[in-house]
Image (cartoon, rainbow, N blue to C red; front, side):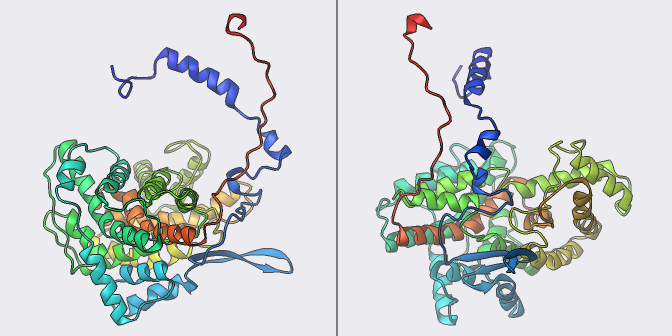
Length: 453
């Protein structure tokens, strides 16, 4: 049997025990050597590893030399995201392309520049001849992030100049990837849905005249139809996931890999590998599954006592996946509020009304209100907690009839913009390869000949 299909044998299990015995590091050594585990100090503050002009995440202010938690704020290129989103919403238009321009080039476009840039992205919205048939359809995967990574790496072979890391060439590559990520994601799902799940196969061509959000809904749905509100909320979701500072795991991965001088496809594939992890991009799937389990275990959606009891069971590792977590509540940086969740919430309610799912929305609203209070009672935490953007995004995707397999790829469709901006920033300012230090704590061992072991 091929090793790719072989189960864990007793021999593999035995070797694993040896690995565990000789590779585990005592926890106290991290304190002894003052190691910032996860590149964070004891208060959760990230180690300063670089500089950026792309975005700022703010969760506290300094008063008399002390950090005071405040309402969370997020800035794209110096502009408050709340102001940014209100700008295009007030004009009754979609904003993905405009915000993409802002993050890549450092300023908002005027009308002519926005029209030209939107048209440029539209013209890039095509894949190489037979790519869908020969690459995406030939080896469908159960995991869409793996499919997406494979497609990105394969596009290297279709690029006539893949290794050139000059800024114009990297910008060309990034613009193309931003344009085709929706296609790679949805087509990958359609292949999986057909060849693995046995459902009908739909491959629709994108429209150059439609926005990114509109094209995603057009590509996914058999009849290509969607409402204005659906497109607007998906557009907003993409924008709120588009960028979140240089220190998040996938963006930092982009910086680390780009600092080596490698090609764009390798850097973006590495970022995708990071985002795939459930501690990063898969959080909203956990939220949706947690709520499904909640609904099975309570009899009255409006009974706060039942909901509170379930939340306490989560924290006591007695419910759902027994990890002791209330998914969607809490963030590595924000404490009082996640600005993305605040912006999102009002529009989520509108969509719930349109979809006839207001009762579920009220349940989400109740958990958002109760969870921080219960966590505060049950846990000793150094900062407050609040709902993060993932708390509502999975619910939104379910109301948009996006399959759960596409939740994390939708994150990638948005975050490819931030990754592209950070890759170009790293290449523009690259001085040295990123190489942090690790302290060796293995004692010296005398070599013994094979016959003596």
